Image 1 (cartoon, rainbow, N blue to C red):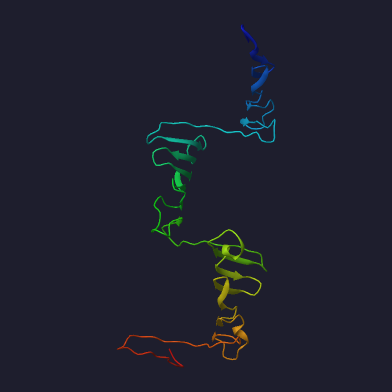
Image 2 (cartoon, rainbow, N blue to C red; image 1 turned 45 degrees about the vertical axis):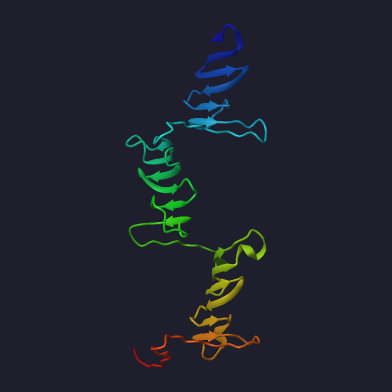
Length: 239
């Protein structure tokens, strides 16, 4: 089927295939097995969109809904329920939500906060990422058997400003380490000895708690109380 005033535009019915052309180029094709291609004549999925004539070509799908409290989204499911999974954008609150089993699981708020298992951010200054469940809740970092799992705190994008503070577990020797101002301050070794300002507390004879090292400078422990209380260091051999 051709447009009378524009021979470059046509709808073609071929053997078990339908295609549409504009400006002399094929734009859409429905193949014999029901696959639809936009920008491709050999779609490999039920719907495939392709625009890659140049390395800088981008391809987008636009879903536009009402500007108020309406949602724009994509529903994923089966014949029993077509919204088991979804990606949803709420225009009113301007958040993006992801769901499984028709329940929201993750939300990116309008200000960029990441909410997992909840739609309510945590307390101020602790709300960039909020994780919530109704039972035991945790985060696991898996590393190689001789590598480290690290949480770093930084205030810059170069040098040690990227890791001024660190919580680290080193699997090579099973030690836990705490770092401030890019210097290790506390280490718990695999056997339990604790070093404050000491990275090898286990080599000391009395090593449950080792404070300081052989670097020059005074070392000490202070127990501070108010004026009507006591400071006590107790020794016991029973519970």
